Length: 239
Image (cartoon, rainbow, N blue to C red; front, side, top):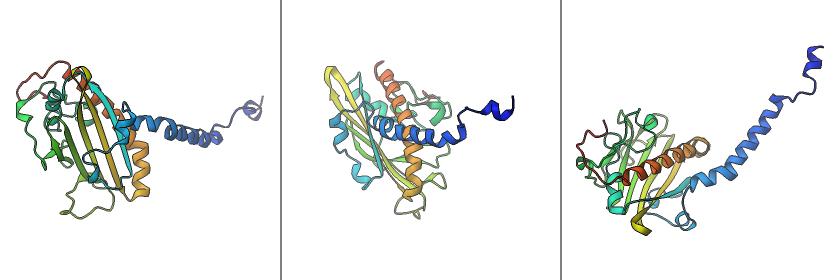
C-alpha cells in the first residue's frame, strides 16, 4: 500500500488547527472568561462601584471576585494588612509569586502598621511594588501599581518619564460583615494598558487568567488561616 493510500481519508490536522483554535478562543471569551472575572461574586457585588475605582478611569478591564470567610472583618483585616513580598507574602501560589518562600501562617505584630502611600514590594528585587492608595481599617484596602512593561519595573506617576508600554491598575480588598459572624471579602481589580492594541490582548489571554488562578488560591488560603484564629508570632514567621 502506498503512502498516498495510507494517508487517504485521514483528517488534515494542519488545516483543521486554525478552526479549532478559533473555536477554543470563542469558548473562552464567551463562556469561561466571564465566569473567571466574576468568580464567587453576586450580581449586586459585580454591579456596584468600589473605593479606588476612580484611580483608574476609563479602565480597559476589571474583575470582581468574592468569597465568604469564617471570621468577622476585624479578624480578617490583620491578615490583609501584613501582605507584601518582604512581609507575610500574598497567601497564593508561593512558588509562583514568592520563589517558594511560604506566606506567613500567623499574625505578626511587626507587620500590622500600614499607611497610605506606603510601598509594598511585589518582587524579590524590589523593582516592582504596590502602593497603598486607600485604607480604611477593617473595611477597605486598595493597592495601586504603575508598571513599565518593557523594563519590568514600577514607575512613579508624575515623577518618572511615562513609559511607552505601561499598565496602571488597582487591587482592592473590600470587607463587609456576613451572617453568622463571617466576612464577605470582595476583591476588585481595574486596569488600563497602553498602547491598547498591544496590552489588551495580552491581558485578556494571559493576565486575567493568571490573576484568577492566583486570586482563587489566595481565597482558599485565607479561609484556612482565618479559620484557625489570629495567632501571633515573631516577624520571621514566613521564613
